[in-house]
Length: 241
Image (cartoon, rainbow, N blue to C red; front, side, top):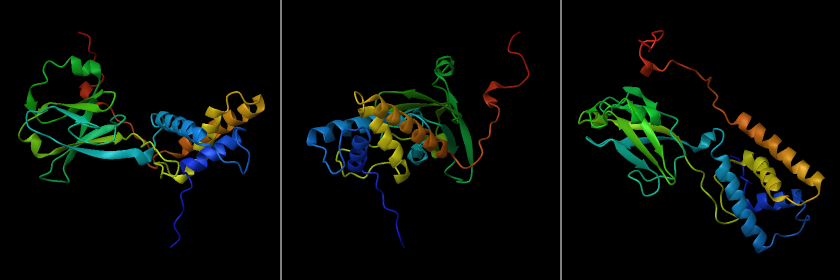
């Protein structure tokens, strides 16, 4: 069986980006200083792009084993759940481990909703979660605080993970090969400062075009569905008395 080769290596991206930006001629080799600088620039670009769009291959259904009486759990390096830095939590659900087919949604809380709760110590079945985004990790709080019965199940959050930075120019990148053109021209656009205007314009236009094409493609195949937020109680009833 033929297996598709991945050509999105840092070395290849840097070489082509430098040629596109007019910083390298065909057949020339980047020197060690250029490799070092453009490796950092490419990692910086990847870190930024990780915060934008879906990047579906970074999604993970992260399970959290609940402990009775404990309402906070840290996800990330050095946390109670060791993982690469999660960027955010998209949605969540609770899984009753005694009956795997039985699961129910968990609803997110904003800072305002979390801070105005009358208490966070009351124990019971988990129904909502609040995410405190920190520099290196996410701290997830559950409400109600799980009691002994709730702790027999697990909470699950859908999280996009931080894309792993590469350190060597021949490393396998955490990007599928179809992203090569976007990364190549994105880096070219970043490093072409000071080049002739026509070169800078070409790099900017192609970087924008390839990036837009990839973001339009990197979407879920299923239709998006919207539903009312049941936390708001009875709809159509004014909150003003």
